[in-house]
Length: 248
Length: 248
DNA sequence: GCTGAAGGTTGATCGAAATCAGGGCTTAGG
DNA sequence: CCTAAGCCCTGATTTCGATCAACCTTCAGC
Image (spheres, chains in turn brown, blue, purple, red):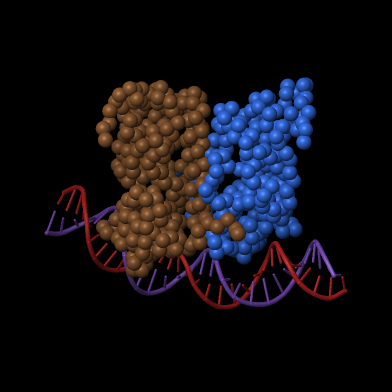
C-alpha cells in the first residue's frame, strides 16, 4: 500500500494522516479545516514511565490524545492510600473539559506518547464543532461504563476474580490479536504489581499470590514478570466471576 | 397529553415553568422553542419504590428527568451478587444516549416522579441543539467524577469509613439545609440496609453494625430506622477516611 | 567487583468483615 | 386475634485477605 498526499487527503495535516485518533479518537469528528486548525497548535510528547501528567507544570492546562502507551488515573486519600480509577489506552482523550473540582492525578504507566493541545484550542473546537462535543460525550459515556464495570469488580468480586478480571481487561485492550473474540492472547503488563493492587483494591502480595495461582493452574504463563500469555481466554473468563447478567 | 402554550411566559411550556430540570437539569440548555417542542412529547410518571425502570416495557426506549425521589443504578453478577453503581437525584437525567452494551438496571429506590421523553425526541434535540449535547456532556462528566470517587471508597476504605462516607454523600444530596456547608443535617435514608450494603460492597450486617457504632458514639441519631440526624457534619467527615489529597 | 534500591515471591500470623444463626419490630392479610 | 413476611439488630464463629517478615532477582552506580 502506498501513502500518498494527493488531492484526496488535501487539507489533512501530514502528522494526522496516520494517526489513530483521527479514526477511532476524538479527532475523527473534525472536518479537514478544523483538523488543520487544531493540528497547528498541537505538539507531540514522549513521556517516561512514572512521570506525572496532570500537576506537572508543562502538561497543565492542556488536553492530549494518547497515541501509545498506558496512562493511569489515580486518586489518593490523605493518609497515602491510593486507588487507580481509570486506565487510558490509545486513542483515548486525556484531560477534562470544564474545570473539575475532583483531584485526579494522571501518570504514565508505561512509556507514553501524547499529542497535546492547549486548552484554548480545545475549547474553541467545542464551540465550533458540535460533532466534536458529540464525540467527547461518547468518550465520557464510555469511561463511565468502564468505571461502573470496575465498581462491580471492586465491590463484589473476590481477590482471585479481581486479578482474572484485570488480566482479561488488559488482554482485550492491548492483547496481540486481530480477532476480538480471540481464543488466546499475549501481552505485556503495563504496570507493576503495586499498580495492579492499587487498581483492584487489594495488596501487592495478594496480586502476586493470585498470579502464581493462575500460573500454577495453567491458565496463564509469565515471562520476565511482565509478559503474560493466555492460552485459553474462555478459561480465564470463567475465573472472573459471573459475567454481568441483567436478571432473567 | 396536550400542553397549552402560554404567550405570557415567552413560549415556555406551563409544565416546565416550575421544573427544577429547567434550571439545574439538562432542559436548562434549551431555547424556549426547543423546550416547547420537547415538552409536547413529554409525559410524567410516578413510580413506586422497588419498581424497575430500564428493562421495564413501558419505560424502555425513553429518557427521563428525575423530578423527585432517588433512582438506583445496579449491575449484577450471574450468581446474584449485586453492586449499586450510581444514585440519581433530582434533577439528574436518566437514560443513555447511544445504545449501551453494558447491562445496567435502574430501579426506584424511593417513590420517584419522572418527566419522560421518547428516544426520538431526545435524539432530535441532540442534533438540533449543540448546547443540549454540551449539557449532557457536563452531566456525564459529573457522573464520572462521582463514580470515581466511589471507586476510592469501594477499593480503599474500611467498613466504618464506607458507611460514614455514604451518610455524608446522602446528607449533601438530600439533607435539609439551605447552607451547603451546614454544620448539621437531617434526612431520610432513601434505601434499605441491604441497598446500602450493595452500594458499599459490604454486607447488610456490617452496615447495621457500623450505623449502631456511629449512633453509640453520638455522631448520628436514628429514628424509625430511616430518619437520620447529623449534629456535627465535621465529626462525620472525620470518620470518612482522609479526604482526597492530590499529593504534596 | 560491591552495594543498595526497587520489584517480585513466598510463608506465618492476625484481624476485619463475612457468614451463620437467632430474635425483635412493624405491617399486611387471613 | 394470629400468622407470615420484611426489615433490622446482635452475637458467635469462620475465613479471606492484610500485615509482618524474609528472601530472591535485576539493575544502576560507585
